[in-house]
Length: 101
Image (cartoon, rainbow, N blue to C red):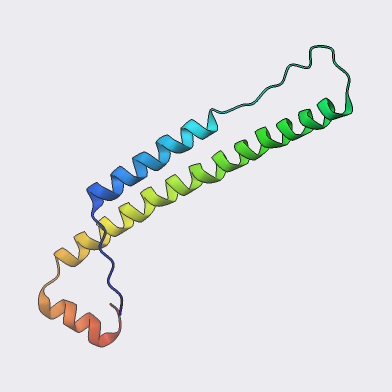
């Protein structure tokens, strides 16, 4: 059986770093000034820039959801730790025997 250790304070730091990086990316927006030039290559470049901006927007929306999910994981983990901390050793072994752990 694998063991997983979550240190809430360290994890919160990771969540904060992730959120900060996500906000930095979300703030990106590329723009191109055509300057009156009508070339197919410029038109194609404009399409690419527009697609890139849409991609950044989608990425930041998904990353925001990931940040929220990480906060929920931390909260659930800490809640579970709190529940376990209030149990006696006999209750923990009883739950293990019953298959509830």
